[in-house]
Structures are given as C-alpha cells and as structure tokens.
Length: 115
Length: 115
Image (cartoon, rainbow over all chains, first blue to last red; front, side, top):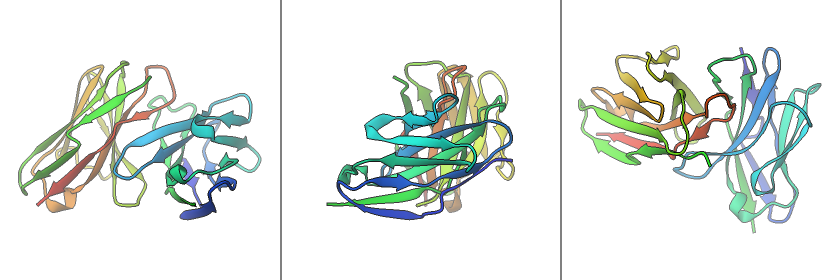
C-alpha cells in the first residue's frame, strides 16, 4: 500500500519570503513523486515530478522539490513566493511497478501568500 | 502540450436523472484515463481507472452501476452518474497520461449539483 502525508493543512507566508510545503510518503519499491497545484474550482495543474536521477527537481513557475530517500520526503520549495502562488497544493505518489499508474494523493496544503 | 478537457464544466440536475460527463485528451492519445471525486477542501478520491476498449476498474466502495464509465476511444472517456441523488453532488475530475509516460494531466473538473 502507498500513502502520502502532508502534515500542514495551511502554510502562510509573506510575499517575497521562501515557501516550503512538506510531503512525506510511504511506498513499496521505488517511488514516482509528483506535485500538483489547484486553483479554486479548477482541475489540477502539474508542477513537477521525480522519477529517477538528480534528487533536486525543478518545475514550473519557479518551484522545485528535493527527493530525500532516507527521510522519505519530497518537499516543495520556492525561493520567493508570490501572491499568485496562493492555492491548494497536492503531493502524490505511485509505485514505479504499478502498471495502471494509479496515484495516491496527500490531503493537500493550502498556501496563503500575503502581500 | 498535454491538454485534457471536460464537458460540461457545471451541471445542475434533478434527483433521479442521469448525467454524463465527458473527458477528452485533446492533443495526445491515452489508453488509460482516471476519474476522481473531490469534496470541498478535500483531497482527490480515485473512483475508477478507465481503459480504452475494456471495462473500467473501480475502486473499493464505488458503485459500478451508479457510476458508469465508457472509454470508447483513445481520446474520450465518459462518466455517467445514473439516477443521481443530492449526495452525488461533488466536483468530478478526470485525468489522462500519454501512453508510456508517468505524468497524469488533469481536466478542469465538472461541478455537479443534484437538487
């Protein structure tokens, strides 16, 4: 079984400050890890993924995430947050051996960036 | 790009009627599509995996006779909510992945309100 934990329901940050959204996972074998962002009443937008290779992954809109196998974490980061980054962020994991490619999502973290 | 569309974006129906939601991959072919349900400020719950040319695979607790899924072509999957009731009111989101690739791309979602 696979699971994802996003320990923070909400993260508040001032514009211009660094933003971190935490994610830890549990999966058998090698994980495929993803971050998505959702704006109100919209579908999910893909931000970035880790499949293999370099542990530091760079994605859309200046976001990056670091895969840490020993800590089973995949935290999302942005060096300087924008008000427009305010949204709901989801971490997701799948087993590399899952032929269907089913994703397990975390509960989501609401990010609020204040001017 | 990898664009997934959904139609309709919003639908209001009377209790007891059936509603069909379409999910299309606009610029790629997808053997597999996924249907999710999302409650307000909650994570996504996978309902079923839709496979082109074969029966859908439903997650535990999802009524297959209630939520009919048809994946008629490599670019179209439909979800029909049969005999809808107010408790079926929700945000339904589909996703698709290019064949052989790991990333799921999501549609914009369909807001269903059953009166």
